[in-house]
Amino acid sequence: MNAAAKEAINRGFDCIVLHDVDMLLEDDRNIYQCQDGPVHLSPFIDKFHYKDHYGTEFGGVTMLKKEHYLAANGYSNLFWGWGREDDDMVYRVKFAGLQIRKPVNYDSGRYSMIPHQHPWAFRNSRITDKNSDLRFLDLKSIGMSKKRAKFEGISSIEYKLKKEEKEPGYIKLNVDFRPLDVNKIDISLMEGNILTKI
Figure 1 (cartoon, rainbow, N blue to C red):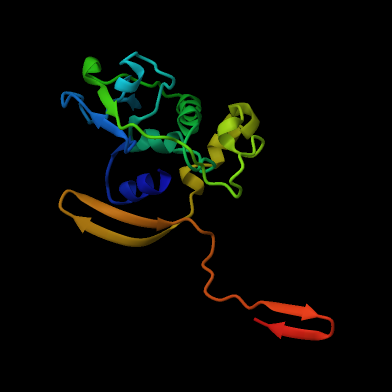
Figure 2: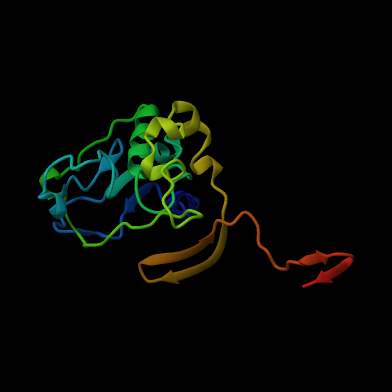
């Protein structure tokens, strides 16, 4: 999300909408136009029987002015896969002194969620390690503090823009987050006194 926001800001956009791909807008009177504060555009979701505050104050579909996104230092870069990044962003927005707002046409903030599972997060093991998988740690355990939010986020994101495809109405960006590119690896094995290069 930070890479997308940074690229949008660099291209002159001043309003950032972060939209989960599984959320389908039901009412086009929900206005996608930035307000004086961060906006939770999706307060009502069919999966949760359109109950207000279904578990997050700021998730699913969110909208911020460029200056608000930068003041919150964007999303954390520590979350991969599904879950908990929205809760982290609530802290960041509040630590920046901002108030989360409701959509202008509040009753129109209705969405259908495409049925799907959330079985994965990017990690090194197929076995869930509840001590290292951020989804299973409480927010304070992963350093949920004003200090981390100040230095870790959009200000610290590193990536390479690998490909840009301009289409009518949108630009598709392919970014690479790997810290380095491996072009060649030399491996040597030592068996007794014999060195073998592979």
